[in-house]
Every structure is written in C-alpha cells, then in structure tokens.
Amino acid sequence: DTGVLVDIKNPGPGFAAVDLVMLFLLTVFLVAWRLGRGPALMASVLGVVLFDVFFVPPLFTLSVADGEYLITFVVMLVVAVLTGHMTAGLREQAQAAGERERRNHSLYRMARTLAGAYAHEQVADTVQEFLGQSMAATTTLWLPDAQDRLCEIARERRGHSVPDHVSERVERAYARGEAVANLGATGRGPGALYLPLRAPQRLRGVLEVHADGALLSSERALLETVASLAGIAVERLHYVEVAQHTEMAMAAERLRNNVLASLSHDLRTPLTALVGWADTLAEARERAYETLRG
Image (cartoon, rainbow, N blue to C red; front, side, top):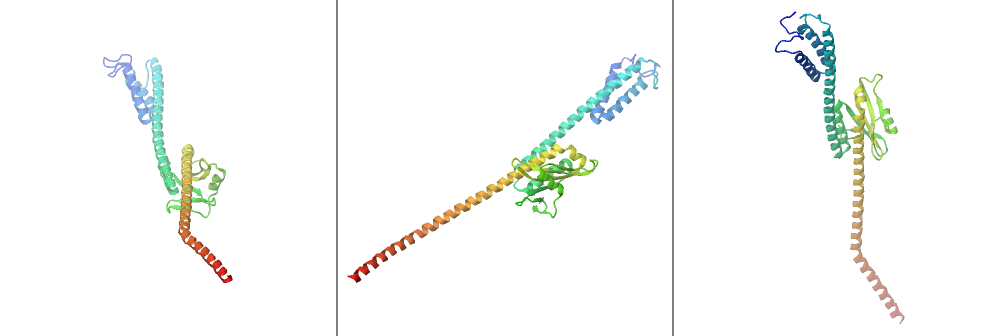
C-alpha cells in the first residue's frame, strides 16, 4: 500500500495533504461558479471518491485502512458542499443583478419613449415592443372614447377600432380599477392579465397582456409598472389634446374679433356719411316747409 501514488499521511516531497485538498476545493468552486449547484454537488462527491481511490491506502479501492480518514472525507465533503452552495448562490445573485440592471435599462428607455409619444398608437407599439422582448408577451391597449366605450388601439390600421364585443374581463378591469387574471386552473400554460391604466387623475384604459401563466405571476410587479407608465402617457396625450383644442378655440375667437373689428372699421365711414346726409336732408326739409308757409 505504499504504492506509486501518494499517501495523504506521508506525501512525497512534491505534495502535501493541504495542497490536494485546496485543489479539490478549487475544482468544486470553479464548477459551482460555471455550472451551478447540481454539478458542484456531483463534483464534491466525485472528488471525495477519487481522493479515496487514488490517495488513501489501500489504493485503487474504496476501502479505508484507517478510520481517521472517514472524518477527513466527511469534513471535505461538507466544506465542498458549502463552498459550492455559497459560490452558486453568489453566481445566481450576480446573474440576477445583471438581469435587473438590463431590465431597468430597458424600462428606462421605454419610459423615455413614452414621454415623447405623440399618439396612442405609439404608446401601444412601445409597450408591445418592451413586453415582447422582455417576456415574449402580446399586448392590446384598450382606451375609452368620448362616450366612455372601450376601443382597441389597432396598430395595423393605425387608429382606434370599436369591436363588436369587448371582453368581459376587460370591462371588469376598467369598471373596478383592479387587475383581472386568467391564468388557468394550474397557473401553467398560456394565460392573460388585464391591468387598468392608472393615472394621477383617473383610469385611462386597460392593458391586456397574453403570455405564459407562470411568467405573468412572477412578473406581476413589472407589468403593473408598465401599465402605470402607459396610463401616465395616455393621460399626457389627453391633456395635450385638450390644450390643442383650447388653443384652437382661442385662435378662432381672436380671428372672429379681428374680423368684427375690421368690418366695423370699414363700415364706420360710410355709416357716418349716411348719418350726415340724413341730417342735412332733414334740415333742408324743415327749411322748405318754412319757405312754403311764409
């Protein structure tokens, strides 16, 4: 059992037990960082087994001549599993932080685009593009018309479309101002979520989202944020439209006043002349009467 390979208790001049253990833990760390928890656990168990087979007498067997090695194996396995678990956790946290950063950057770009939107169709396109890239979702924007009837923003036709029948879930979300979910009995597979467009002044419509049911549940906060941004954008467009109508009404009123002033100025001179002529005729008639009586 002195063997060609190294005994952990009597390592050769080029090896030490701590070196072998450090190499073992380094391997587990790299596997956990690159591949995750499952492969790291397998690497931990496999590393202990290989350590027993190649470095613990009797060599090339799983037998252990000295019971003290069992404690060594247990300690190595526990440390390796903990190292792999913590490393995989740090890796997942780093990936989650990177994903959040990318998501926040995309959300910022969407909010900036919505802030500069000039039509409802552009709001619908922006929301569809963001959610389509983020979670492979399809969306429909429902906005009320002058009679408070919900209309679909038809991007293909670039305008509003009044459907023959509005979904009962869409109407319920708009009437109650609460989200309505249709995720199926198990919450798996295709699902739909109907989110009211909340704005500072009032509800501005409904955002209908179709995607995987589990994804809709896990990304609920993101979807509500998108619906809120869309609602603010729609309300801004409403007040822009109101301001435009007010400006047009004021311009029409100014034009009417200018026309009336111009007409009154143009008519003032002939009217004054007519009044003067009428006075002259009246005086001439009185003198004629006096001459006839005299």
